[in-house]
Length: 488
Image (cartoon, rainbow, N blue to C red; front, side, top):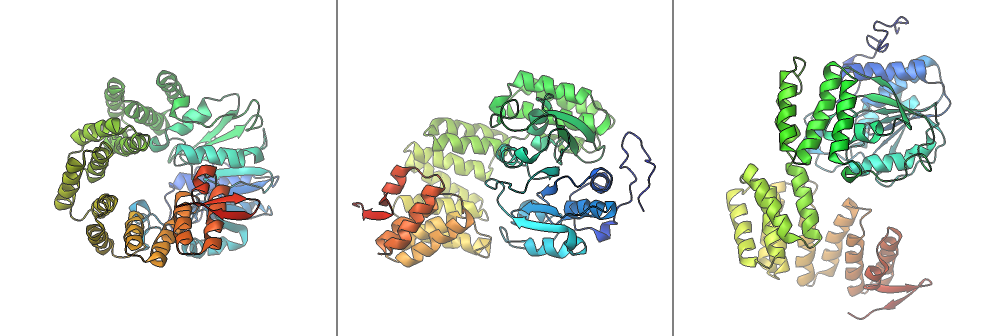
């Protein structure tokens, strides 16, 4: 039975009776976060709208929310949304499911939430594209805003269902340095978001919308780092940190440290590191400081964006600068090699690829990228050898990166095996169902195989997903449901 007198009036959920760990699914939530979710739906939920859980993983948050609704005697089910795609790089360490990368883990969610199945309705969706149509939302728990795009799409999809003055948005990662943008998005709009609760353990913050979230006076833009000048963002994060104490203050300072590192504000980075290390409550953060200030993946993303935009010289500069900090890092070496290729420095690029596979022979992507490079040079036999070496390293097709199917499709097309090439591109399309290039590539192969109706279906699907008309017309011209073969 839950205590009715709060142990801590400033945080009445602390000490709340919750299911024991062995009765909950494997979780990445802190204990206080579980307490908070049960307390929230048991004591604050009125049944005026849906309870929605975004990114429940194996269902611990879903069960906690469902447990509170059950105890409170309110009707309704928790609406849980996830893509249910397994990511070994971080999921396996929290639950050793021994599943292949990219595999469907919905069956695990169903198994672990069986005790609350009557209170749960799960949906397998891609939150980059999903649009909520389920009416008002009373409690929106968000553990899925893992990047700027997802944060924007979640607000765009679910924001209209939040009722001003009544709904609650529970941001799981509000205080985590990796999602430093969440306090910027919410904290920059005190006219729109009223902060209500913040856990001391974990990273939850709960906010209430003061007016309609979308439209005039609400959110009228897609947020990005460019939305917040560094000086203004730093002042805002400083102010938010100053309003808190203990772990919460340090977590918000860590958000500022992350932003300073991304913006290459080396002086602020050094000062913030020292400030955090001086604080006696830094126990959890101190070991993470190097990770917080490491911008490897952002540098890689920026480098690839520049190369795709035709600015290969700048991409090359980013690769070399980052390699000075991370000598030998294979993903950076891959960017370096492709940037050289884009600059027509092909001999240098090939030497980089050769050095990469020799010095990092277990790096699957190294073999695949050299295979792609060789396929572009029409050296298909060598490309096929590299691709098969990568497949042997990956161990199974489920674990192998998508580049394998790109190389395989080119090789099979060269060998005259159109159906094999179509099957390879189909694997790419299945992994990226909302991307248009695989559909158009498959359409061209289908056209060449004489399967024009199937090709036309792919072109139409690509056009529905937003492909440019000129790209579609390179395969077929579509007019009023009729198709006409173009030359080539």
